[in-house]
Length: 197
Figure 1 (cartoon, rainbow, N blue to C red):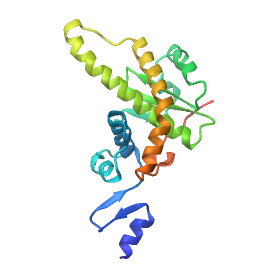
Figure 2: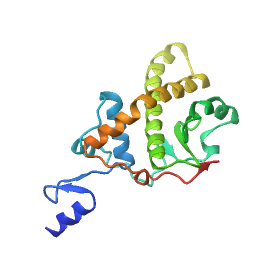
Figure 3: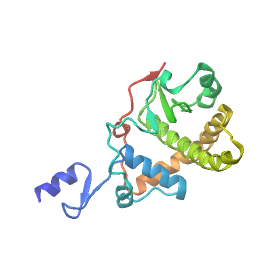
């Protein structure tokens, strides 16, 4: 009984000690929630999200496709790439980009970024990753015939498209996650400390 009470105090739901359901969205469950939302328009239930979480996504592994709170020099190959997308994020407290040489999406946080800005940046980064993966899949089938390589302008287009989608869907994602019983906190996503000034 005491063990069950401890689980409940820590934000867990448990019908028995063996079947623990986590309410919080850590990085792995956040990825599952966003991916499901983008494919179906719905955030998975607590049970579904916990079942889909990749058990082997250890937080200390460096091979993550999304870097939250990254440094400028990691995210951009050259200042021109930054200048090309900066106007898209004028009203945001973050910038999201893709570095093709590293194959990763980077979310850079501005000085004044608050908790919700960090959550939105993480959501935006996953949206951009989804767009790039979708484009990669269609490109790989075409490139085998035509030897095509994605251009920098393709990535800029994906970033612009992701901005449009995030502006219309982030609030819906948050509300849907809350309806399903998920608790979101930027600290659970463990963002890096680097900030843009």
